[in-house]
Image (cartoon, rainbow, N blue to C red; front, side):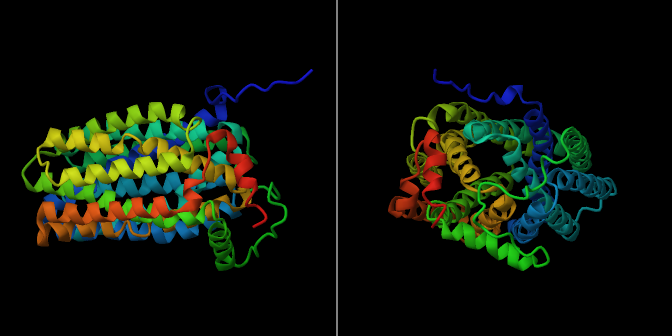
Length: 430
């Protein structure tokens, strides 16, 4: 008699639900701050270029400190790092609240606050992202990533109007809610750690037993091992340039639109509401992602998603009315949840746990490497080229990413979810 297996139910896993609560609370805090900082910077400085400097500096800090975060996530218990990161987030969000209450938000204070919070995120968020490897089995990883995409869309849906509403009260209100979110994230991370203390610690050995462990005293050596492993995998490293280019082009386009709306006199609440409307469409995309990932190859989904984002960026050049922008951006982002679920799900399945922190940080750094340029492109582009000229530059970058994806054989070959583990094994000895 042949035994049958029942697919793992994520919603009956207490540890997954606790992890999701912690990660969601942290994500809401990040969404609020990410929404508030560009607008606060424009309000304080009335200069898109200075706002771009603040945003770019934060992204640089996150990219740099993500490298350290990957090493720490592979050296130490990941839930311990989640708790420490949340406590530090409480302190920083509280300090931001005090500055806002004292009416001390300036270009310099916003710059420092953004850099410190971004550095905290870079150091500690990798641990939370990597901890899911010990919580969710491979046969449920695609669905877990699709659920994460739905969660992220819901955060955007709530974060825009909530951020706009809080900003209408004052910057201190944003800081207060961020502080509360970090408290919840820390408490749930503690529950996760208490429930199974060894679960988030990097295992002594796993499915990659052929690889010798890195010298624990040499952080640079460990970091190089993560980069070397990732870049040696044709199924993973070959797609990173494409991701970097699309991240720069599309994020610069969105930032350009936000800056232009604020400079045209639209309220923070309206901008937040527009973001929520786009988030609602992304939520719809996240709901269909679990239907697409098991049926279509991850490579095909990626190319389709990149193409729709590129077309949307081109059309944005001719649309400047708020609800027209929502319609265009909504169509552009519809397939992004499925794209992200496929890419991240395959990455998690293909990467051994002992390397996951460093591989995660390496992939993040390579994918985010150009992101610090996005607010600079938007800020200086608006000042020098105007809205349409800046969006054309962004569209050119997006078109380049599609060309790279179509020409990338490794990306095109990524299969459907059920074949991820089998496909990844082909590259283990390469």
